[in-house]
Length: 185
Image (cartoon, rainbow, N blue to C red; front, side, top):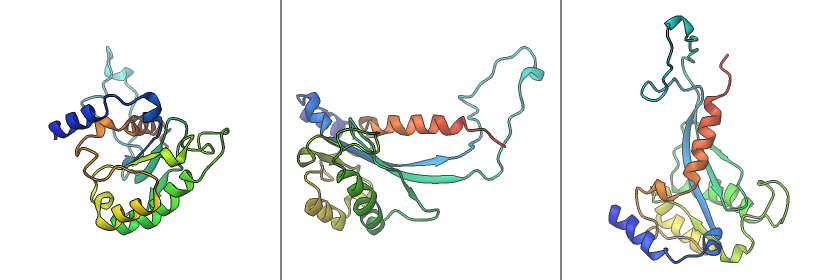
């Protein structure tokens, strides 16, 4: 896997900012609302335990999985995957790619909010990025992508186990941080 990531980096090392601006980064991510504190990372220093506020725990915190896409100038709507829904190739193509993804790719506005603007300036030059999840690499999904998307990285283009290369992971981190600060009642 490390060699695949290195090969990817070497293959794209001469890309310009404009080249990278054409990439539409996508991914799914799980979120847990009102997650308990992480005992390894969430520490509070105090002279007395009486100074530490009690932490309200939600007995069965809600969990959800979302799919999203981002570019240098816009975001897609989030596709919330229903509870207990397995994201197989059919669901991914029918609900996510044909729905949320294509809706975002059809936008043409040059101004407005990040949910209204076009994903890239020239959609014909865009490159759709998806990772190596089975639903993404399924034969029918790859066929659908080749028939409906201007360009996309086929399953051998994106190195496996490389979330560190996908900038949408930073967006998921920001979202998780915001969710962790929601008031608990």
